[in-house]
Length: 169
Image (cartoon, rainbow, N blue to C red):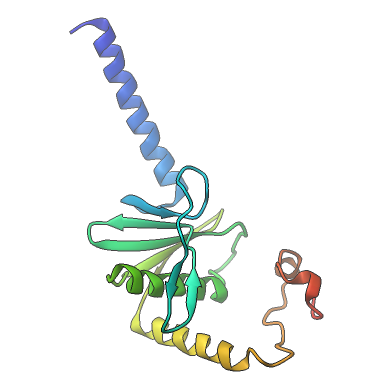
């Protein structure tokens, strides 16, 4: 074997090792990325939609592991104790949409924060709570005032509705 072939083989091993480390550091589960809404290296996919619930969503990633499709949501905020309820239900909505779109029920989804990663099981109970929540949002959507659901100034500061909200902290 020539020196060039040996050098190329060693470089290949180093690149495989580096890619494996990058994947682990990303917090993404193993598998093939089949959907991305990050615009970083794949074309942005169309939103997932369910007509029955009137629900639309774009998970950051969908990872396929065999027949299973796992939604992954990346968050820019740090967490101290546990993921925010709103993030859990956002992820549950993505699990629901994956089930409707791909016809395979995810066992879980992944919430990736800068300082922690959580595996959130997609149970029948969380699905039922999600459907209730969406229904409640639809029935109360006509109300003029829905009170803020937190006491976190930082969340208010980063909120997309801050400019029109009369309850900022």
